[in-house]
Length: 139
Image (cartoon, rainbow, N blue to C red):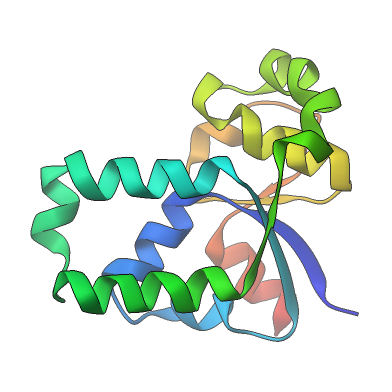
């Protein structure tokens, strides 16, 4: 049975910026990944306005779109209508209000969050794993 996780946008950006363990993990059949539909707007917003990300991207816009499509193909996007009943609880427990949709999906599905943001571990309601912890679980 695959390890189910809610994947945070920072993980997707890591996979987008470089061929890495992170990208390999997203394609790993031992993982079943989910994310809120908010991920799509967050990706688009950062790709259009974040100069640091634009500088780090080593591929053309067309290549970037192709990689995004491939990455998203391996993530089940959960519509807000499915997890909205957990939104208030998520807002109350998340260390960062912008990450509330990820916490809401994690609460809805009862699965951990995959992120490399250490501050998201500063709560006790949702298990949070970083890339290294996931690698150790799969070995």
